Image: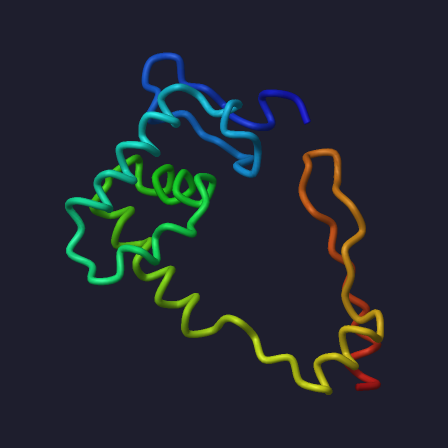
Length: 133
């Protein structure tokens, strides 16, 4: 992907830049993004009224940046969204792998087929397996 595919930079307001690809080396983030991630981590650690702040520790920088960008770098909203995300994730994951699920996954029902020209994953779903399953 070209640089513009990663991020569309607003020259007047860094907070209004739009990142499209987050899962990259942190050194490819803008200085503004890196600074905001650091500030947000401190905000979570010292200002958030959430009893399990250690659950935030395993969240990647790319995930933090996604929440920050989604809320125009509003720390209060981002922290609330992140808290809800963690609670949702703890409720539904890890997924219990049953024998039926193993059979379905091993059947070739769904698989990854690389990435397209915009660096998005291509996932193939063979729905015929659902009919037979």
